[in-house]
Length: 535
Image (cartoon, rainbow, N blue to C red; front, side, top):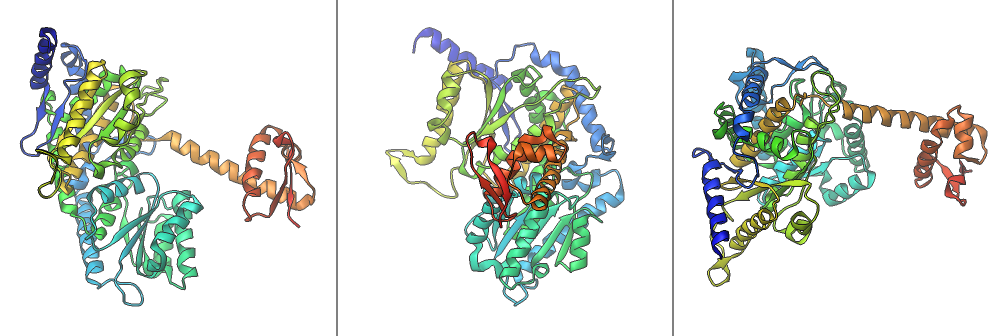
């Protein structure tokens, strides 16, 4: 190592010591030393950061944070009910956690069992977005072979995907408890999954309501369905909890408790991290430092992607969970003043060291349009590890690969930050969830957007509804005419010539499946194909 390299290494060590954020109580560490912010950056951003702290405090006190829907945002109350602005909210939270514990215990002891008396051995969770991603992440991160119940998920409206899950459950459907999660009860993907599950139980000669539990808003379509049919139980999903921040509500706690996971540990970790990230001393607040590093790395306007690299198999699904939490919260066209800003940070990731054989080559030597978030776990496993080489374990290799990749990126001017936790446990999973929830809220304040609404998601749902309404008109027209027609011909006949592409694509799908009785006569070019109703 030459003198210049030695000096650079010492400078990096000094920068690491200066900027390392470490909390002794939780063991959480955040290293921002490999982010290339200037010496004056943190000081320059401090007024904006203090303003963000004040806005976060207002949110926790119950200020209307989602003006589109006129609602509060209270996911922080879920792990510390006394913070709630009203006694009835605190009571509702406490009662729900108690009911979750009691219900899970009744299922595990067989007090609540399948209609034939057999204990429930499987859990089918039906949800979409935050109603599935959070529970899936927790289940995969904390689940073990010894858990009393095995979780499965319907997290899409893909028929083949649901068939695969049902095939995995197989004859165990009779011992399967299904939890349907939807705040409104009208989310189409979840409703479709519920109806598909109900049909599967019916085919197996089973009574679906006696296997079913709902997590939903009081008085919702799903709540009414569950009450009328006599489902086993119903748990609340409050309007002040958004789907992407709902994992510490019954949405995430009920599946976790049924699986046999320590929900008190998850809540404790989230509560401890909330307290830590509520500090207004910026250098000692890891969520504030995360938000500031996002602002630095992306110029406060999403100019770079966030690559999430957890060096732990159990955290594989964390990047998927963060995609929704961050992108749905921050991806906004308008700021709070109505200005067009098109904010957002794209998030993707897999796991280390797998990524060293996938896309780290591009990260180090290709286009520099990203920053990396490494997640390091200090404890390798529950016990000692065998040596794979003299004095070296598999876990040593994993730790070495993390440090090596971090160094290799830094040498090429690629920025990264590193989050370190002692182990993967209910407590640390709760901490990670709370850390990023707070960072999202603080960053949104820094760039003056509302993190707690999602108009783009609603627009997509409305557009899908328009397509399905047109599909009904298309099929009705074909059945009424009995003719063989092109997409252009059908669109013109419906008075919708501008919709010819949608007509064509809709018919391609209809003809590939037996459900609507549509036949296709292929032509060249393909768009001149003709469609009719099968005789």
